[in-house]
Image 1: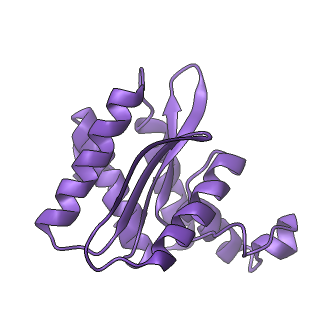
Image 2: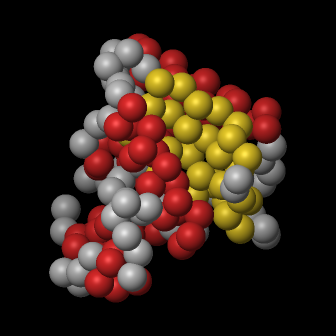
Image 3: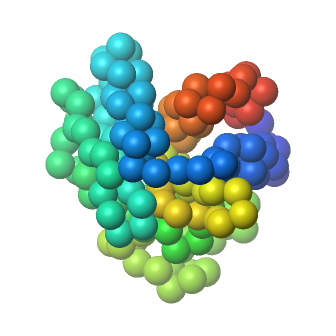
Length: 163
């Protein structure tokens, strides 16, 4: 898939996966679903659901490391700054042959334009937080989150999956 096609599909994902309502119970359901997916497939990932500055769910699966917690924080920070998925921002920068530092003056110590963090948006409200997975290749981190959001919302993942 080309960068342009990825970006178009990610924009579709972000629009389609907005919630009508989202609260701490929904955050826990989402985190628990991601944890179950990781457990079932023996994935060494860290999972985080945050409502802006309030942590709602965190799990570190066997095989993950302290480095994953840092990646979660950096990817989540990017989503909460731009209200777009970290993978979309990374793809845009790749298309422009640029970096976060060159384009926005943002340090890679604080932000990561790598897949795995996705905005939690509420229709009519906007971005209220982020869900983040770290530990897989970036495209797989991103798609794990999308798959969980589709499952939670009763949507067909195959209609939104990156190809």
